[in-house]
Image (cartoon, rainbow, N blue to C red):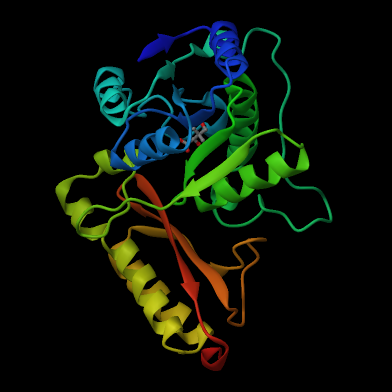
Amino acid sequence: MKVLRSPKIFQALMDRERGRARTLGFVPTMGALHEGHASLVRRAKKENDLAAVSIFVNPLQFGPKEDFSRYPRTLAADMAVLRKAGADYLFVPKAEDFYPQGFQTSVRVGREGVSGLTRGLCASARPGHFEGVATVVTKLLNLSKAHRAYFGAKDFQQAALIERLVEDLSLDIQIRVCPTVREADGLAMSSRNRYLNSEERSRALALPRALSALKRALEEGRPLGKTLRSARRSLEAGADRVDYLEIVDPGTLEPLKRPRALMTAAAACRFGKTRLIDNVSIRISQTRRK
Ligand code: PAF
């Protein structure tokens, strides 16, 4: 695996690989890698000749009171994960090279008067977060020159926003959203799980449990409003704070009042100081919609 620090050299190398008619899969990450990331790299490698990964803890997507400075930085362990998963290139830029002095461009998804992907759900608790994500991802995709880029479905709102921006800006890359990888007990893998102490770790199961109970009940034809209220109560009993638990349209992310054939239940809540997110897809047949 070749490790590159300079954005210009990374872009030139990727350009050279493309010129040799090699297909490139790209996995942007912030490091602290786990099996979820490894699964993205394996898929990138399976669907392309080469897999490139970036590790960059993007300051633009953290609010002033968030965990930017304590976000885990575990480069040596990450490199071992990436070698095992078959990555060919690792791009690890320094912030000052990635956002050099004078950098002042921002990418914002969502317009006044157009229902926004960046209005509800995580956007309410994390102002500015998605603008930071859209900006870094646009720049990373441009640098990577990749044919395909891979993102996890756990970051459901992020994935919807990236699909939108790639479409809206006609970026020449295919976005693949890959299934959430879970621990054996159901907790979605996340770099932030390592912040949890053992008491918080066991309470954190309230999150996947509330979502799967919600999915089961709606797929059995129970009414949406009542089912959602009861799932919220059970999540509130386990979490220290619930930022949201919503059933939304997976395309527009608008909250739903009546069931549809395809919906997403998404939640964010805190256990101690750790904020976790998760979501599940729900499919129901016409006869069961109430
Ligand atoms: O999902 C992440 O790890 C980050 O938001 C991403 C996409 C790498 C952008 O910094």
